[in-house]
Length: 140
Image (tube, rainbow, N blue to C red; front, top):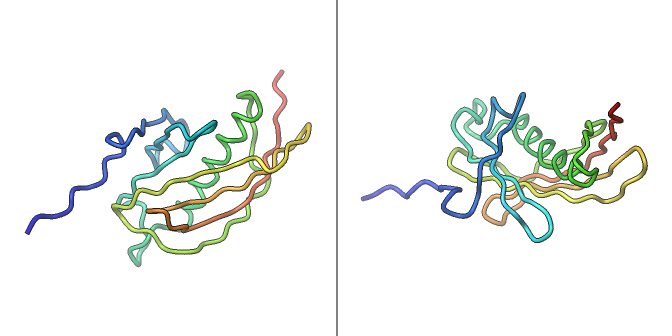
C-alpha cells in the first residue's frame, strides 16, 4: 500500500514569498494570483501543531493577520500598515499535511484606516474567519 503524495504548492502555481521577521521563522508563505488580487498559503508541518495534534490557534491567527496585512499593503499603494485590531473565529481544525489558503478583502478604507475581512480554508472548507483594522503608517 502506498502513501498519498504530499501536496506540493509549486505544482499548483504557488510561489514562495520572501518573508521577513516573524513569518520568516514560521513559514514559508506561499502566494498566487487570484483574479485582481492574491491568495496566500501555508503548508502545515508538525511544528505548526499544538500538543493535541492540530494547528496551534496562534499559527492560524498569524497566517490570517499576515494575509490581510498584505491585502492592506496592496490597497495602500505598497505603503506600510500595522494591525490595530484583529477579531478571529475558529471554525474547524487543521493538521500537518494540510495546505491552508488565506484570502482577504478590503471592506472599507479611510484616510488613516483599512478595514478588512479574511478567511482560512482547507480543501474548500472554512477553518477560520475574521476581520481586522490596519492603521496606515505615514512614512517620512
